[in-house]
Structures are given as structure tokens and as C-alpha cells.
Image (cartoon, rainbow, N blue to C red; front, side, top):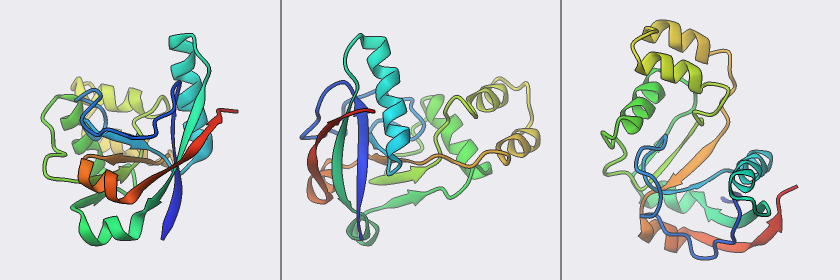
Length: 163
């Protein structure tokens, strides 16, 4: 199954690099994509506002079946305790993504980040955090952590304005 995925930003990225970026993102340092075009547009618009540039989407074809068959993958299907612990560990620089090539799951975005931050600060217990997170339908992000997997199974398919 080949799916279309997007990276929202201000520059075309024809050759994605997994080792560039911040360490303490949701799933660690990697190349982030989504299969939800509207979400990529929001990412691009936010980045464009900060940088004072035009918002664009880089579009790719991702051979997800091949990745699932050959790579070490972690897929979160809900905002649950496992997702919460993973994201918190990533934000704390503990790098729970070590050893994975591909991670997919919900985004700790503006809809849920307050809950994550309150939990991280010890101001909310896990049970309360999980109850609050259960109200939200996860958005979706894909993090490619392996350059080999990225080079083999992600094909650049052009750039378009983020609208």
C-alpha cells in the first residue's frame, strides 16, 4: 500500500534527512510527515508565519507496506498511556525512539499539549490526563528515523502551495 504523505514548511524538501531537527519532539529526531493534508497545511502556515515566508507542502509517496514488513515500527492508534509516556520521555530527552525506524501516531498539538504539559509538571495524574486525552480524536504524524528506510520507501512527488 503506497500512501500520499505531506511535509508542511517553507521550503521544498526533495531529499529528506532524518538526522536534522530537534531531539525532543513527540517521537524524537526524525523526518516528520502526515497523511492528513489539512494538518500539513496547518504546520506549513504556522512555520511560514514564524519565518515570514510562503507556506508550501512537499508531497511524497510512502510505501507503508514495505516499511511495516522490513523496518522496526511503533504505531500508536490512540492517545493512551503508552503514547503519553512515550511523548513525555521524548520531550524530556530520554529518546524512547532509539531502535525504531518508523513511528506513527497522534500529535501532541495545541489540542492536547496542555494536558501533556500538566502531566509532565506533576500537576495532573496519568488517569486524569488520559481521561482528558480520550476526548480528542488523534491527528496523525509519521516520523521516519532511519535514513535507509527513508531513502528506500519515501519518494518525492513535488511541491504545492499550502492552501
